[in-house]
Length: 397
Image (tube, rainbow, N blue to C red; front, side, top):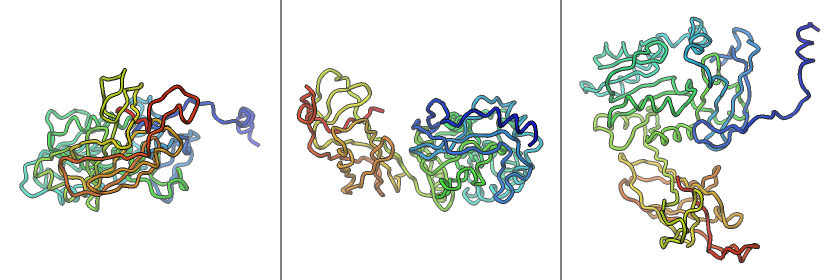
């Protein structure tokens, strides 16, 4: 045995579970378990991910229990200079040979198919790399610019109707900060057209063997459909998803942008049904809710309702989420029922949420009702002096 290997093996501690602090998802804040680890040199190649050998540096990834986001924190404290030196350096073309020209020219054709001829829209390619995409769009007559924190770091001085970001979100160390930065350059009524590979159904079996998980490419944020929806919701966007690609947009896009979105796919809205915020923290209110306790309120009647306004354009699918903190007895929450526009919706428990999905073609005002089993008094089912009728405790968000 080689001396250095023997020494490394001798230095290993006895096997034990790692004593590390709990890790939380960068997207939704839910607990995230250790998923797998991979060598730093692994790059995006389905057939030869270690064509350049092993570095001996292990990069760990976690996966969120709720939104399924896979992420690494190994580079959280890296500076832009660190990324430029160790990832986005002269060797980057070896691990992503298509990024200079092949992929941006392909993306330019895709974008031109979405844009309407002679429509005066300003476009920004965010995370532009070589800048080929924007240059090609300019040749097609599009008012386009490039911005990239590394290769084109001069920030534009105007807002844009359309922002493209292809192969960008998977590089984000702080997904919400990246999303906020992109959104800060978006004009009112605009949209973000993006592309990033989504985890396959068998990701739990493939783990970091999946070709797209590749630290040498800087791929440290690996999305699921649910994590993309959560990311957009946090920034006030709906997710548009379909055979035409993916996009984010807020309510009331300008007409020419709405026509682009219609080519991309159908809108999916995420609606959180939180407990109503009330100043009555010391006594019961009269609207079916008990007073505020910490950050939640108990229901006190078998039916509570929310009035809401669905965004425009009307979503084709709405996911309702109820953040449940407590239930008066085991199984009480899952015995509840949700109704929307005359539809009885099946509730499931996903993490801390009760969740139901509805199909709809109607926008505007809507009412959602939660029906619970008869509330119970703690003093009747346990040793307690609490005589209130309680159902489920729903968080205020």
